[in-house]
Image (cartoon, rainbow, N blue to C red; front, side, top):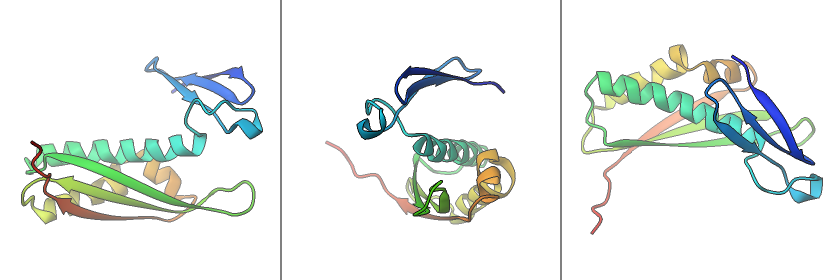
Length: 142
């Protein structure tokens, strides 16, 4: 795997990897940024959510689970002192659907967290990662 990061101005960068998709990376104006992109630590949490979300969705599809969609909320505690690393991460999976099998949901999360998601595996070496889930029925929109 290879990525290229190019400076645009100050601490504003763009990066792309093997998929050839550009991503804006930026910081606050007070540090030379232009507020035009995601912060690097945000991108790390987004990568975590995308990785585990892909796993869970794929596993549930194979199980033919009755889930309409998935939302993932991630909260991270950050150290007060530099380098201000993550000290704790919590992943909340929100499953939308009518009466999905709870055991299927639990198993999909477990497989993602313990076997398939490389982002989780790497981050677990740096800080604890916990998870929870809830089931919601999507409101009817008129």
